[in-house]
Length: 332
Image (cartoon, rainbow, N blue to C red; front, side, top):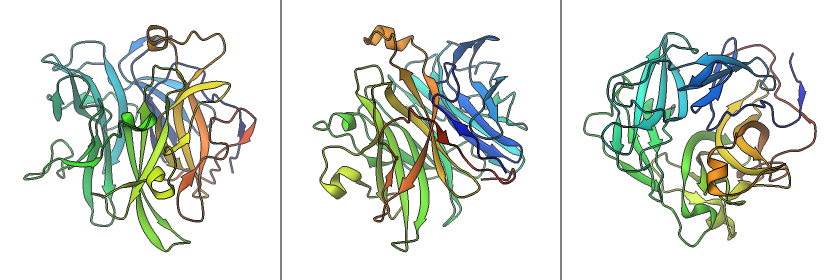
């Protein structure tokens, strides 16, 4: 049984926008492009058996997509279906703006091979941060994504996971709120279905990050939930008449935590894996933050009696904590 202790950060490398995949052998984390000891990687890979100790595993996407020649690869998310691993990511297109691509491999470490064209693309950074998941209630696959002060979008995928389902359409499930500092922009969506034992109800929890990843104390993880995957979603702020829906925000040591992934350990405890800046010696301005490493962080995610999630301190932990528990390596 593995239950190691840890102190944040758990990976002292520039590893922004992490995705997470649990396999029989352990956990794989995927990060946005970065300069590593092995050179510039399009999609970084790190591996851990316990969620606490991480080691680099190279570049998941060593060959750039034909439609995205620039070095501008973000926000990877990997899932497994059958014997195939699917990598969803966004990159700067050769036409204009950002697009979301999908690549496949027979190994979680890659190399992943791009499908040849983006699933969706458009101007600026509207089409970023893809998260693909299976709704076990009806076995339908969905992709949610979005940013640039526009609503989070949802659309059904077909069985190949290489295209959207025929006759499907985009559904807007969470709009930004101009009057709320953090909710002015939503990005990095992650939808998690959970049955609440106290309420005896099943909810879809939509976690997002926002609003300004490169500003001063202006970025955190927010939550909304719905009884149906397509919504409507109620934010934590709406449910409790709060000023915001943030469940993880900056503190005296770490700045702008967010762009999160979620996994469960063998006790069914949920964990947030996310990035943040270390404040020490940091000059806080847009240009500096764009080039400052964002380290990999870990904290537990719990639920209150009303079925709303929370983190234990409301901000990144700074003390030594007990980490995830793994009895044996199994699929999530």
